[in-house]
Image (cartoon, rainbow, N blue to C red; front, side):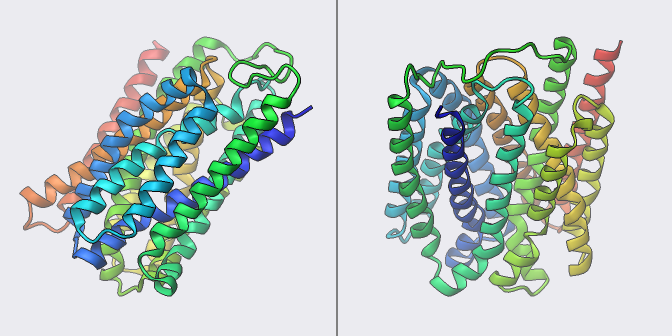
Length: 392
């Protein structure tokens, strides 16, 4: 039976994808700062553009994968990213690199919802948490490794390595997709887009409660990524303020990645958080407080401690969104697309608010942090309103 080896292959593709996309997209702001002098406001505008494209492309990408097939979506997305980054390595203008980023985001949006669907499709309800747990640990672990080592790689190999290294990963993945498609086609009676690998069993959780938590998680996750993408976009400025080199910035600013990884491991093995509102609410509150601390303190020690809280809170919020998306309903590709589109919405809204504040309130250096924090508080109000409505 090819079920387990096939899923292992998908997890390998996922790990490669996480390393490559983290390395390129998260260090893109360092590249624009060093190569073209982009400051916090310009990088926040880039981050907002990234999120806007992701929001639209991910929603469409999930639907495309559901209808055209998972393998088709992966091949198209990986091919787009691999080719456009190879082209980008030879370009020299900021506008050209912005176009490369936009095209790469569109390609990436065809991959994540598809990979989420591949690890979830055909799984029994009692085995779905296991697969989601592995999925989260793999992408978080390889993403943390990419950010931790990325600064040193750029210092050692040069800024252009942020194009060549990910492109090599994407083209390797593309070859892997063709191989997985071949072994799936050779499996007796296999048709991955519709096959159930295991006998169906009834899911024990009440469907009404499950849909409530899906709404709560889909609401909370974009706001979590409001904080994430704002933090990533201004991290070059934070590193400059603290006197960190690119290498040290990658090391010191990757703490929240590893904290999120630790949270994923704990949540994977402990299911007590499933369908428990107090855990989601507590994580959201911790996210707000730690976000404010990270962008306002001038102490490296405090920055690291705040990242531990931030990463742990983000881990539970993201895990909730993905788990409930895959646990409720059968159209895994579409639900994965909605989950990723929600992330894109957050990636757009936070940096857009931060950039607007820095533009109109330029005399206040913390105006961007205040604006994004206000958005996060609005998200908290919405979260409580959704919960109160479902309880009455």
